[in-house]
Amino acid sequence: MSYVGAGKSDGVPVVDLRSDTVTRPCDAMRAAMASAPVGDDVYFDDPSVNALQDYAADLLGKEAALFMTSGTQSNLVAMLAQCQRGEEVLCGAEYHVFIDEAGGASVLGGVMFAPMPMTANGGLDPDVISRTVKPDDEHCPISRMLTLENSWHGQVQTLAEINAAAQCGKAHGLVVHLDGARMMNAVVKLGVTPAQMVAEADTVSVCLSKGLGAPVGTILAGPKSVIKRAHRIRKLVGGGMRQAGILAAAGLFALQNNIDRLAEDHENALRLSERLADIPGLGVDPAAVQTNMVFVDFPEGSGIPLGKHLAKKGMLIVAGSDHVRLVTHRDCGIDQLDQLVAEIAAFYA
Ligand SMILES: *Cc1c(COP(=O)(O)O)cnc(C)c1O
Image (tube, rainbow, N blue to C red; front, side, top):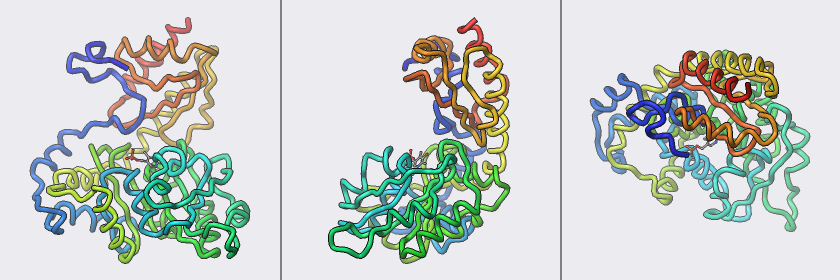
C-alpha cells in the first residue's frame, strides 16, 4: 500500500490505524535514546539494557527479565527454554503463538501446539484445558506448557479468568507463559498492577513496540533459571545484540511514561466506534470495544475499495476484506480520527 506523497509532505500518513506498532518515538524518547550509556550487551556490559531488564523484572514482579528483539522472538525463546522435542504447548486456537509466528517452536524446537477453543473474550476455560492435557501415555506428546494471551484482539480477560486458567495449567504440572504483547492495555483497562496481572504466570512477554511506543523490543520476564536458559537461546536465534542500550533506553522510557496513557487510546477507540456506528450500513458495536481496537464490518465488497480510497488521502487501514480491525494509539489524536470518520462517511454517502 503506497501512501508517500498522499499524506503529509514527509511521507507520514495523516492517520494510520493499521496497528499500534506504527507509533514513532516521541522527542523525549529520542532524547533518552541519544543520551543512553551503552556497552556490549553480549558481555552483559550495557548499563541501559541492564537498567531496563531490572526495571521490567521489578514492574512485573519476576526474578529476572531479558530484552528481546521482538514479541515473536520472546515467545519463541520462552517456549524453547522450557519445552523439549516431542513436548506440546497448549494455547488458544487463535492465539498469536499458534497462527502468527511462523510455527517457530515447531520448526526450530520440534514442539507441538495443542490449539483449544477460546471463550468469547479470548480466554481459556479450565475444563477445556483439563480435557486437552495429555495423559502419561506413550501414544501422546508430553504436555509441557500452557500459553495464555491477554489482551486478545482488544478483548480483556479479568484477573480471575487469567488466574483460573493459569492455576488449572499448574495443577496439571504445566509451566504457564502469558503472551502479554498488549497486556498493559488489559492492566490499564482493569485498573490492576502489571505484577498482579502476571502473578500466576511463570513467564511473561510484553511488547514495548506496540501501544507503549518504543521503536523496537520486547521484555521476557520470569524465574532466574528460565531467563538464564532464555539468554542462551536468544543467542542461538540471533538475538544477542551489542550496544542495544540505545533501544533499551526507549523501552525503559516507554515503561516509565507510556502505560497510564493507554487509557487515552481506549477512549479514542470507543469514540471512533461510536462515530462509525452513526454511519448507515456499517456494522460496529461500541459496547464491544474494551481497549484500543475497533472491529468494523463494511458493506459487502466495499472494504478493499474503501481502503484504496483512504490510502490516497494518506489514511491507512488494513482493508483486505470487509471485516477490518482499526487500532488506536498515541500517534492518532481525536482530530485525525474525526477526519477519518468524515472521509468514510463521505465514501458511503
Ligand atoms: C504483536 C504480537 C506478538 C509479536 O510481536 P512482534 O514484536 O510483532 O514479533 C505476539 N503476540 C501478540 C498477542 C501480539 O499482538
